[in-house]
Image (cartoon, rainbow, N blue to C red; front, side, top):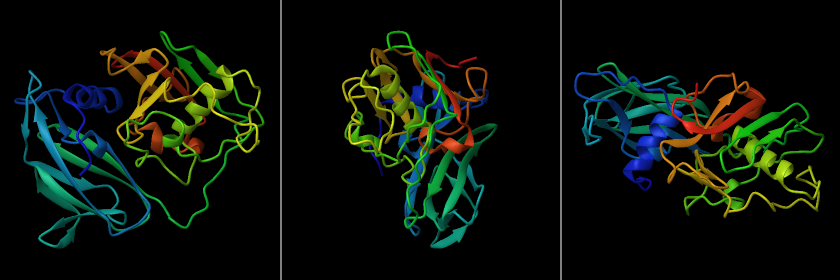
Length: 280
């Protein structure tokens, strides 16, 4: 299992990315023990992941809950119970087996509370895609971070590894798509193009470099799924403020998935804001 983040960041991560029902007799909400399990990206089948769920009380103390687990796509992800592949399971801990290429949502349910895990199994033989950002809009609204409005150009965004660009706290970018350009890639690209003064917009240009987006300015945690810091706006130290995003612009919707797996062609307009949860 991947390293568990500290409790404060885990709770904020839950509240800032996923809409959860906060009304139950015993618990305020349920969550995965490891915040990295909200998003799982792999490039091969046959892999198993152990996922545990706990219930959080009003004082944020937690305890295991006997949840019901379901999969939205049994062609991609199933559960292993007594060595058998099944489509549902119960308990506070389950073993998920990745059985095919594609996307699935694993959902844990306890009473009226739910928490989803977004799983993507990529085709390891697929060629990484590039995107021409001529009709992409990225709107970044910060407090200390510079406001950025990127309205596209004729450059090219490649499917780069974000761990090579920003501070990922030693976690790498295991839960970021490697074959498709995502909303997270577009955010970092837009910040670089709009705030650096070298006028290079094509990532295949030999002159392209990351001068503004650097490990000292941008931090992404939870294996690439959570934008924690842009310039002076840090969700870890600035709680209850944190970076949230919408698809479809500032009046769009907040998706129940991380920007690291939101393919750019799904919605080419994204807005990011450093604000308190929920961003209305």
